[in-house]
Image (cartoon, rainbow, N blue to C red; front, side, top):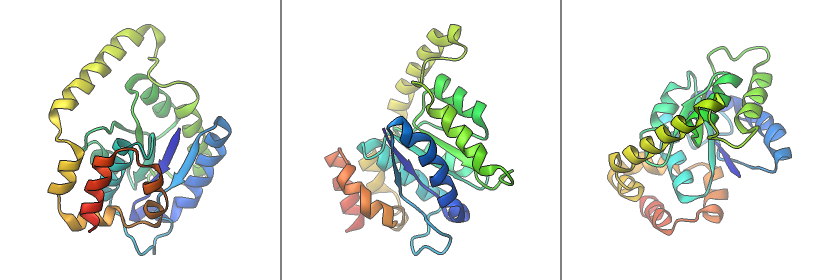
Amino acid sequence: MKIALINENSQAAKNSIIENALRKVVEPMGHEVFNYGMYAADDAAQLTYVQVGILAAVLLNSGAADYVITGCGTGEGAMLACNSFPGVICGHVEDPLDAYTFAQINDGNAIAIPFAKGFGWGGDLNLEYIFEKLFCEESGQGYPRERAVPEKRNKKILDEVRAVSYQKLPDILRSIDRELAKGAFATEGFRKYFAANCKDEEIRKAVEEVMA
């Protein structure tokens, strides 16, 4: 699994802490981590949480990433931005129980963590425990297990509703403010990783049009 890490500007200083915790947990599981930045608070490319949503949507819908780890101060803005786009189901995760139940019940592909709220002593350990429970087993199996059948049915219903509730992502990219979208693709990580990992030519073309 390709796991993308994205930090917006208010919490960019914690990027290395988050990356280290993520790599420590998921690389032994056989997953790859791609750090899309921001890497530091003074990076030239400054991402807002809205731009985090744009970038997450492009990575997930194009196949450049299978999962996105992101957040902001409270986690709420990043979650809302991610869920504004098709192909992204982002949960708000504060602790390992949130991570496990979101993975098993909602079977999403992104989480938003509150990196400022309650992030003090032991914050790095909490991140490790979150990532352990998020990826400890195949997602979407249901919790508790006796609820698996209705939960899977509800997830399928949600996917069908979302399929008719959103425009296609390339159309969205061509419709939103161009400078906003360009800013979402301005990180060093995007330049390093996107082209090599993108599997969708229509999305690639839309991104190239935005960047032109």
